[in-house]
Image (cartoon, rainbow, N blue to C red; front, side, top):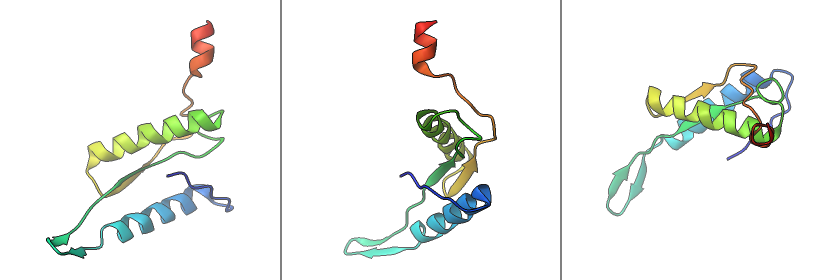
Length: 94
């Protein structure tokens, strides 16, 4: 899922939204087979401070999500600024 947030404090807003999503997802759901509860891992990357292109920003967010998964489900990780990954096309051309 990709969210486009445009507030004055993008990091704070992104972390608040991620926290709310995690809380909503964690609510128990009653199914005929019984109660189930799921968890999620969220990676946050801010454009353009974390990446030079939208594609790179998605890759940085994906890497942050995997770090969140390693930390334990039900959490988010915000990528540090300047997490820019090389553009695969530029690397292939070099």
